Amino acid sequence: MLSKFSKILGVSAIALASQLSYAQAFSGGVPAGWTGAGSYGASGADGVVTLAPGGGTQYGWVSSQGGVSGASPYHFGSETNASFLRSTTFAAEAGDALNFNFNYVTSDGAGFSDYAWARLLTPSFAEVALLFTARTTPGGNTVPGFGMPTPTATIGPSTLNAGAVTWAPLGNSGCYSTGCGYTGWVNSNYTIASSGNYILEFGVANWADTAWQSGLAFDGITVGGQPIPSVPEPESVALMLAGLGVVGFVARRKKRAAAI
Image 1 (cartoon, rainbow, N blue to C red):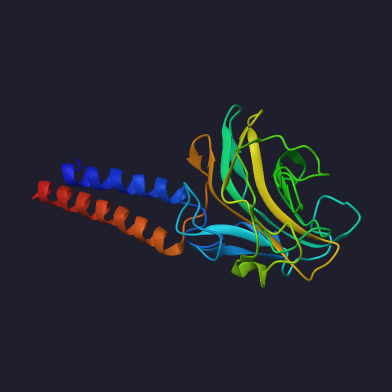
Image 2 (cartoon, rainbow, N blue to C red; image 1 turned 120 degrees about the horizontal axis):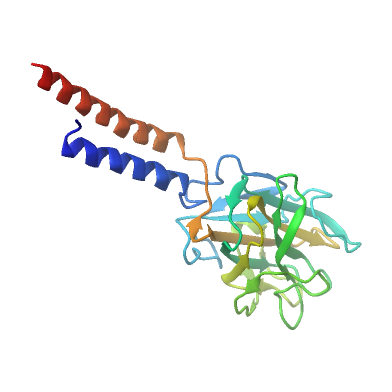
């Protein structure tokens, strides 16, 4: 039989594997298996964007700087380019809460109404739900985005912190005209209606020009109260396997000692 020490170590290794499977999504960069188009990445606190509540040491982001044509699912007649980032496929049960925080940042102003969104998709990229929208506006609410489809998530209070912005993913600092600023971290909460497999998508689009940019930061993603699954980093996998190897070594020594 395994010693008490090896049992504890074995349980610890299993717990480590579980923690690695549900690691904070962006602390190690964009998770393996996530896919996107245009400009996206992960970074720590920078400029006007602090770390997210409930998030890790980095957050994910998409930016219209470096966006590509045709990447937006919405067409208001003046899109120039867009970027998006999609999660790996994850399983969810009916009634699970899909929860995350987002921060819309724009250096573009009135007359150039850039916008951002988050969607829940099927594995074949069919839209299940438009979770939230945000859009540059010279007055009124930035979230939800004016002139866009009605989002379905419950959105926390959002007040635009108006003025010039500094944030590296935008590629520039300042403000063109009025309407620039950032929302700060806003909570989005959506109840998944049916059990199944899903993909989470975040995106942002330039509207009417590409001279000034907008972006979206996001983090603290949970499904049913658990952080969204991500693929463990190779170093973490090696650590987990090393722990399991120690368990096996201790078990073999115990068995050999008993046979003497």
